[in-house]
Length: 71
Length: 442
Ligand SMILES: [Zn+2]
Image (cartoon, rainbow over all chains, first blue to last red):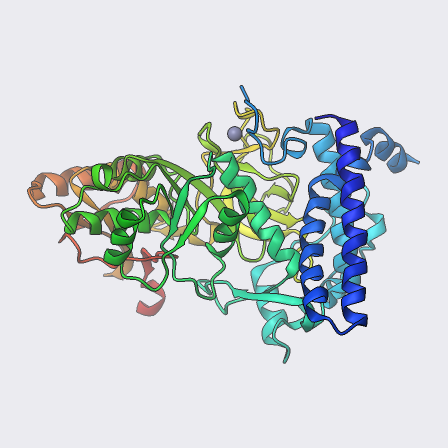
């Protein structure tokens, strides 16, 4: 696994997050609880996928952090 | 040497230390800003301390943030009419599940978790179960009462997540649990170390040999320390003929520590999900690398009821070595080394009930249970250690040997009382084996 694979996974997770948000909104708008609440559950899982990878995509460079502290 | 699929998350678990530290800092900053914005308790606490989240830019800055105690959390709930008091960050419609602490040290704390939190709990447990070598088609029996304590609930959902079949053995007697284990050919058990020993005892009363009749391969222990106390670990392993793995967690914090399949004598800290600090209890400053300190923990991704720098009161020591499993998550050498609030002074000597456990469990002809009672007699502290003698044991010899070993280990004279097997209390969770009667005697 490498940075490229991570980016690819991240793209798919973003698509899922967007789809989950849309399904949730559509479920609410059309009085369709089965859609709204299952989408909420899906989004909870999507956020765990994000915790598992997305934080890695914007790493804080320790050097940059030091520079910020001493500026 | 790590093989394919060794890690639940191969990115996080093998991050180089400097990247892991940077990730922790970034996540801590985010968790702090979230708590400041959404938790009335933390907005007030940080405000009183003059802390603005954006001022926290390094680990040294984190040390400026006051730690959070259990009694503060208790007060934040008891002083409020709402269920979760000022600790809750979300409206009630966003809360998915309720649990509470055992209340061993005061009023139980009510813990709110959102849908995401609940997935996160299972994720933390999935990380540890995977690291312990649990894989489909392992069949896990969970002999747990499935009540308000979080204990094994998250373990249950983690088994589902990683594809291990779960047998939810709540609401059954110990005998019925043994029968179910046998009938369904369970390959693993998830329970407290105390209950693992008790179940083996029950199996024997049913004329079953746990090793040859029940074929359990792995046991994951949680809910109380013990599975990393060498004598207790050896005892559970020999009773069941199974590998035994320890895990550490707390309702307020999450499932943060685990022993991996390499069993290198320590507990990994899941450092991508938690910031763990070891502090001097007096100065609240980090201890030196070779010093024991008190654990202070921040879960980095919690949503409904987060805690920042929460004092667990467990004592631990960082291992100097990284584990042979290849994870960059650091190890706590020997796991948890007892709780600071269980350290008591007896005749001027600091006394830890855990020390008694490590002695008692070395004797093959003693049962699994013990109880320590400290009381005042003729103005002097008296320590009594009650143990159960297995049939056929030489009581005079055992009495003398145990007193000698306890004296060496604790530095105190302990009175030994030998009881018949099965007469001391048994526990499923949160064993209470230490009784201090001195407050009531005064
Ligand atoms: Zn390891």
